Amino acid sequence: MKTAINKSASKGGSAREEGRSSATETIYVGLDWGTNTSCLMSAAQASAETTVSLQEKIPTVVGYAAENVLNRVLPGDAKVLFGQEALAHKLYLSIVRPLQGGVIHDLPSARLFAQHLRDRLKAGDREVRAVIGMPASSDLAARENARKAVQGVFDKIIFVPEPFLAALGYRDDARVSEGKYQDPVANSLYIDIGAGSTDVCLVQGHYPTADDQLSEPFAGDAVDQIILDGILAAYPDCGLTPARVRDIKEQHSFVLAKDAATPAVATVMVGGKVKKLDVTDQVGAGCEALLQKVFEMTRELIARADADSVSELLQNIIVTGGGSLIKGFGVALQTKLLEEGFENPRVRVLGENYKDYVARGALKAARQAKDRHWQNLLG
Image (tube, rainbow, N blue to C red; front, side, top):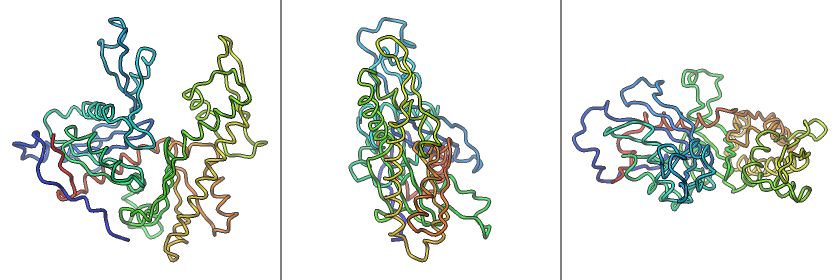
């Protein structure tokens, strides 16, 4: 159970490796490659451990120009745009999201997006080694697709479960030796609520095994669908799009008692006219369904933990991901655990900068990795 994942390097190397001898030529990358948004961090190998030379959040979007777009409509008459620039010009593009459920869905678009990430590094001919977060229960096919997406883009890679990277990124290294510090790497339960999947993971000082993890394809996108179905049932002619529903959720989401929640009023365009719709019930139903699913997964994984570790584990339940930003989510989950009979649980929510922790943990892992851990990628 408590063995680290074997990341043995394969033989060979990319053409860019030839002639390298200086450690300063290597760039380390930590990547949280998310369904909706990716977070990229990088640093030179020779830099101080706390140095980050690049830190960016980029919408995980590839936009392909329509064939009939006129000259000078798109920046530089580009045929492909990425991230925020693609979203800003979406009227003239075919928008593709390369990932679904946290894994590669469109391999050609994923490769283009990966190359865009490398371009952001301005690495030139320098070797680039990347640690990439993967959903907790990614299967071999998902990892192989991810490897294909970055082959020839990054020189060497390691795939690590995202919850472990989040714990490593959240860890305060200066306090690890303190007796009262609750080290998230040593003993914690991480709940990562993304767009496509919810992952719950025991982090107990080693890379999680399959038995330490649960993953369900019920997360932010599923909540959006519940909200959309409910709104369309009440207001059939509102013409809401999934993107607009996501905006409504992000602005109004809650898991409070209805009488304690601020009414969720959405402004929509119906037949060219602005209307205000009360969507409190619909938003509440979607968020409550997610809370119940997370509670059930948390309860199951606690039952799998070593009995001697549970008391400390209950003090270190950490919620991250976009779904963690639902108002009242941490308190509501803690209340459910108390009502279930768990003794004195403590649930913490990482907050709006949650994506930074996975990327920062990945960058830490890159700096700590031995040469034998890296997988070489032939171009």
